[in-house]
Image 1 (spheres, helix red, strand yellow):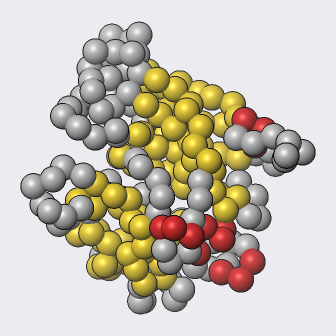
Image 2 (cartoon, rainbow, N blue to C red):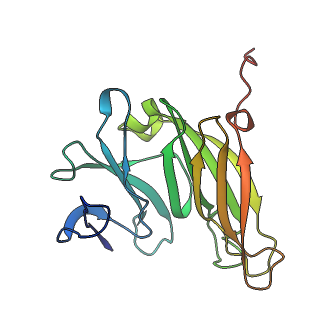
Length: 199
């Protein structure tokens, strides 16, 4: 399995620590997230794609490791109910809700052109992020874009949530461009859920 290491800077990137090993194994690790709210402020979350056993089965799962002491020790891995692939980007939208953007890989035979055309956003909450079992976590998944190119390749993304609640997402996608393009999308929480619609 692929090992993952971190370097830390305390001066805005002018200098860096020696590399520090993490227990995170797998490919395409997410950015390191530090929770800033409620009981778990300061907790680090770091996820990666890990091949599921048996090794000959081409199935991957996103798993997350936690640290409550700035990376000195870690807990996990913990699976999360989110089928995905390549470079999930997670962050807090507000004090309770987390958004994760990523490419969806439906499995089966394929690679570029077959697995790589769906770009999704997933909304979850802190309770689900704290869950130790997959069965205790939930998500709402929103299709954001679809890559129609015969050699489709999409899902390398980033996003920011502005003070007014607008979520602006950027994404790498081929679609109707000869070599690729960056697309932007404007979302709000109402795109994931409508308040006041309980039965």
